[in-house]
Image 1: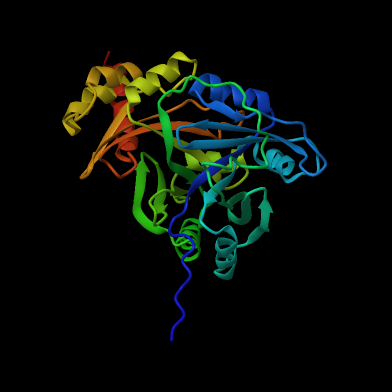
Image 2: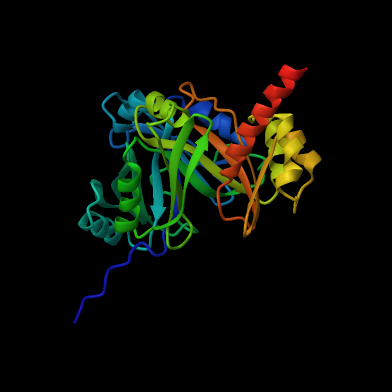
Length: 358
């Protein structure tokens, strides 16, 4: 009788995101003051067994752990030296962390840390891409809030309507797109749900989207086409020092309200050429929000057979310009707004032409 295949990844979710930082108060202020997160676990002094300072932030179902190393010989210090502030771990919630680790390693994953019990939680980690890991976390979110963090609540943010993680955008080195897809499909039982080639002028990139079977974890994987002119993906890889998370997309149910509030709290978003909105009526009939609302906040809109999505990208404040936040509202659409790249490019070209004609 054939032994049934182990399926420890069927119910995987994003447990939390670890963001390694060089200045914990500044990073915390950026997210609390700008995006409305609350600190559910204030930093505690480093110890010999845990030589870092970490803060736990939450809004809706989004949970972030900001970690600042306190000693030179710590992995987080090495991460900062190579990459600067960035996402170092996409922690995955699973029913059985030890089983997930064992099965992932059996299928070819590189182990990072073996299973260990931490309070009422069990964790174990494998390498994902670049220097980013996936920590498997087994816990009861209702009763056990990451036991290795401090228990003292910090400042309560006002909230801005962000409540979940839509996807992670990952920049990969040339030639690593297919092997990375294979890792997610063969090791973690993800499905590849979308693929496309994006050409913008003389630049091009290839993208494939992988998603967990639970549909709770989605990664947009992107590699540059080195036969074309270097573009933003090449710049990321050079400045970041290899593969990594370029941006995290936070979900809102009302992007006009959320972005209006976040903008009012001092966060700058990328501006959209006025010509984008002049061309908008030719390609989409708005199902939600008005053209005037979109134009006022520089919001982008795209659609697919399932419906529409609205999105905007925050201006990066990273010293290396290698990380930023996206805000997204889905109104039935399941794709990722790739036609906005082409539409923005056409709008810029039209804007240039109009300027030359003036």
